[in-house]
Length: 258
Image 1 (cartoon, rainbow, N blue to C red):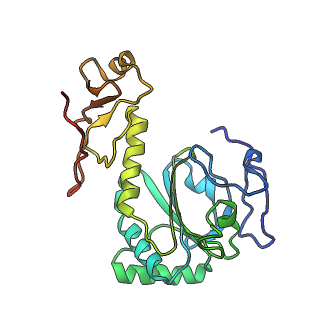
Image 2 (cartoon, rainbow, N blue to C red):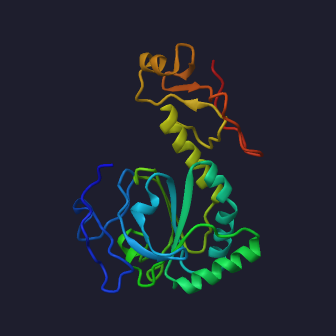
């Protein structure tokens, strides 16, 4: 895969590993991840040994999440929820990796305690970022919310390492694992089928014809009669026959055609 030239830039003297920001990402106010960016490469110590991030992440969908710290109440419930979701991530060809400012020994002990509490092993690595070098370089700290530790940022990266989705939560609000899984499904449907997804979409719901497609292009892509207009600007199509709604998921509400 052709990549931008990632040049070494050590942002803190005691960094866990150099964070390699492409030249275009560097600026006086620091880099913040944006949808479409290639996420920077870095080296770090984790609960599963040292990693080089690009080598570890490339080729699978990746859920990278930051947390304020180990052995804290909200983070513990999040980690338990994500550990329980590992089979669902595997089913989507995805993997998770977390980041906190704690030493590896503390993270290892915390993961063991989370497994005892929730009954699911934390089967993904947790990055140790004790000096905040990675969090600071990658926009995971917010001075007005939490100047000393990362906020709850979640980034979904595609197999080519592009940032595809960004969630941010304040320190005292736990993130939603089900929404992470839903967005993974939506992103993969978008890539596979060239569609858009409506509000509250779940697998098995109606899909949308992207506004960039003319009616003729929609016919060519989805087949004449494969979609129908509710309005000139609102065109729907049926999901693939293999798509199934998650148990208990509410259906997307769309107006009826008139």
